[in-house]
Length: 197
Image 1: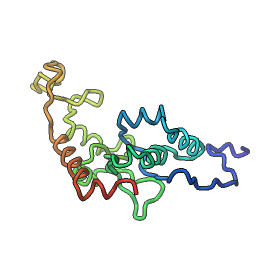
Image 2: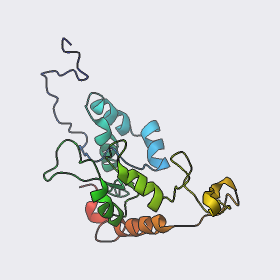
Image 3: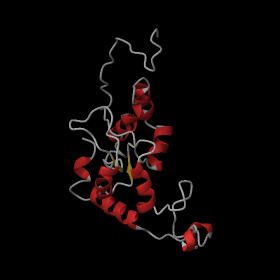
Image 4: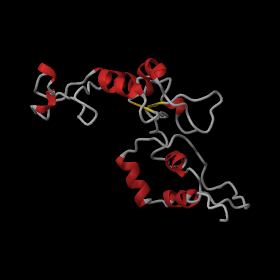
């Protein structure tokens, strides 16, 4: 407490639980509605027990849901072990990933991941992603154009200034890359071998 640090360390150590097995992974995840309901209502008390165990961990988002999913019979075979992010780590990994730059753009695209991290705030590769991958040419505050944009780019105008059919979806190159990634993740050789062990 004298140091006014964000973390208060104590010398006591907790024993490893015997009622459930601990799992860890990325703090970035997509959760199904049924898993969220199970985590809130916890009809067999596992989510609450795990929450109490992780309540004083430094990075509980990197373990809580993973531990709940992999210890619950109805969910443990539903996991896809991927966080949909392109991240560049040291080998072996250190505490934080590399900051991505223009040198990483081709690898980011080739990964088929819809998200990437970590970037410096004014990194030029972000402008290139906006312009080339997201077609955001109207400025940084403009929406990413979609099939609902009914205008033209004549004389530099914003095609989204004219709203067409808002229900119209037109998958672009990013959707094709995402489909390729999801198909790969759900393939027989990647899906089951990478689930809770």
